[in-house]
Image (cartoon, rainbow, N blue to C red; front, side, top):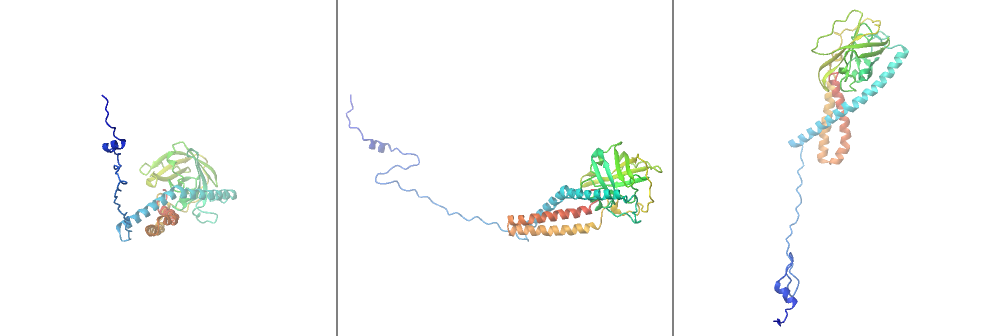
Length: 335
């Protein structure tokens, strides 16, 4: 049977089904759908952190951290870079002076110079060469902390290399080039060559000892011996002195009369000796550095970070290196 009912219009079908789309309100006859009311919240201004004043404990903690950090950076930069450059420059000058003195034949060969005065501290007196550890250094007279910045120093109470008796040479382990940093690797049989105003002298290593080790046998009359001394232990934290003993295997040269003994040698020229007067300069430099660090921190908190770092960093780096140099001058002479 055929349905003869009148078909329903399409518009009525849609309305009757109430078809809606997600998120869209159903259409209403007679106009557009009503607008949704949305509530807005006005943005609030972020709270500005309170600036710390010098009376706050956190202000001083920040200043202390900045000062200590810059000081450590300056110390590391000086120990690993500037002191090595200073040593290299000093060695170049000392070597040229040594060559000139050898050519003129006026190089000191004893404790007194041509004017019968004690040889001035820092005067080049010999050339030390140890091929086994790749060492070639100009040796200067004296063994204070300031003299050993140039290079290894001949202890003034001992004879010159190549002469009868024990010649003592001290050198730094870590700072200012650390010329003696590898002498502990020497073994019996290694050769040491030293050139002085009396010629070329050859020594043969026969022992390496530390503070608690027994001393070598007493030197026979007319024989020659060399003793190299440096710091022993960790870099910058020595636990004592390291001694390298070597016997003279070349001809013994004439030995001038000694006018200075070990008892008359100042304490700052002995192994691990310190210059007491250098501490005043070190403390003064440290006080200036601390004052500059506090000023830099105050500028950083009140002026601006980029402006402060741009101006303050070079100044603090220079002061840090200067302070580190002054402190090193007051430390034991073999570090």
